[in-house]
Image 1: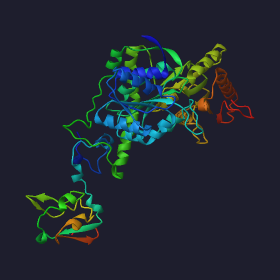
Image 2: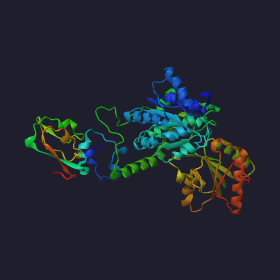
Image 3: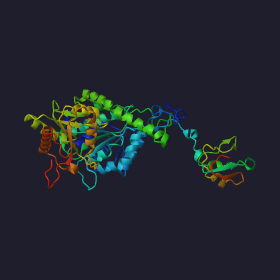
Image 4: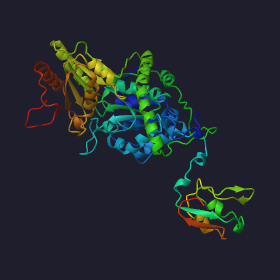
Length: 102
Length: 396
């Protein structure tokens, strides 16, 4: 079985799955979609109360959580929509214009 | 087991014998009877099929795609504008490599609106990635449908299959037919056991993901290779089918092509008419022969070139108008296939039988008369003409 992680833009056609089928879940993690981010959120940890409101609002699951605390943004998947900044009750998230990370 | 059935009944009966998992059904003349008969089988409990009535052919093919991706064996039947409405999904089925089986009862495409036979519907879908197998009569329509799944479902092929027959001429005319015992059909077709399918819970699957430029072409090459591989598989299945039925099939049928100097190439029910014309001409000592194309996709180019290599003049007869202003689709394929021959026959294209326009034995004899003149004089005249229309000029 061909796994998604074994396929890349150098793979010959013989090594791709028929019709582009994907045989495992969660493979979007492997795909860098942060490259077309329009604006960039910045996380201010000192102002964050870890209320977790931003996490479920993120349409791209780009806010990782560990041990009940949110971590810095996953810029490989963040598109810069700014919803997190909108819902954050504290000054813990600000937006920068443009897609460059940090 | 001998019976008398119409082409639609014969195909519906083949479907019943196969007992597929899902049918996406929407009626359209002249294929309406197929889902109609099948609905009766469902209502009588004679099949286990999930019969999904939908609001359009776009939906019936969508049902088939979803069902086949889930791991089921899915079928449908349609004609003309119904096939046209499926157009988008035909490509999806093929590119997702889902071996759906579709009975296409050939009918003219609108417009002008017309319900009678020609091949404009399936010819419009000829580049969609579907295998296309055409029948001359009811027996072949039945046999082709039974052979479709073992062809399409083969892992090296994995392509959907369209079995075609001429609307009304074949679909509605009742003919004698030899039916196979149901257990023999079931054993021949076998179970559908894809390696990957959506309902396989141990192995989550995504079907039909967005294909960015760095991948799209590779997947199209896979599809093209699968279509090439289908040719050998079609012949393999035909050999196996001959063992259970005694009936022999190839990529095309050569009728009295031994030492033939003049040949007609065509598709479908007109072959019966053409065979009668060939017989008459052979009785008069004319070396006439016929090639009836059975498999149009994949196109048997090399084999056809070989079969026509000894002829002097060939008429390719298209039962659809491609509006290329350069001849019909069968002509384009056939003439291209013969290009690599060292010695090529003269070749003309005759578009005929559109929207159910009748073609008689005498019409085919006229075509052969034209070929005889071309072979003798070397003067081809007009390469691309129409036959059977009223005209102020003489036509053939």
